[in-house]
Image 1 (cartoon, one colour):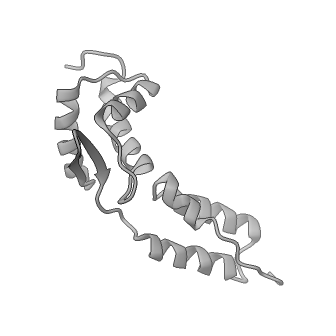
Image 2: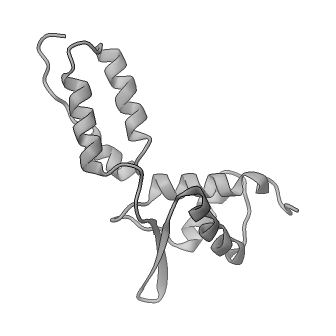
Length: 132
C-alpha cells in the first residue's frame, strides 16, 4: 500500500526524471532524484528508490549506477533513438517541401521529447529553406 501522497505515480515520475535529466554524459545522484520527486509532490526513501530504479527495467528503461569517488551517479544507458538518428530526422523534417513550417516545428518538438534536455538542445538546429 502506498504510504505517502503521490506514491501511485512515483514510478512514472521517476521514469520521466531519468529520461529527461540523464543521458550518457549527464548523471544524477540519489539526493537529486529525491529532490526531483519532491517537486512532483512524491516522497520516497532511498531504499525504495533502489527497487524502483530496478523496476524501470521492466518498462524498458535501463538505469546504470556508477560509483565515482564517494558518490553513486545514475543515468539511462540507452534510449529509443540515438542522437544522430534524431538529428537526421530533424533535418529531413526541416528540409521537406510538403510539411508546413508550423507542422515542422510541432514534429521537431515531439522528437525533442524523446531525449534528455541536454540532447534536445543539440536537435534545435536551423536548416535554411527558401521555398516551402
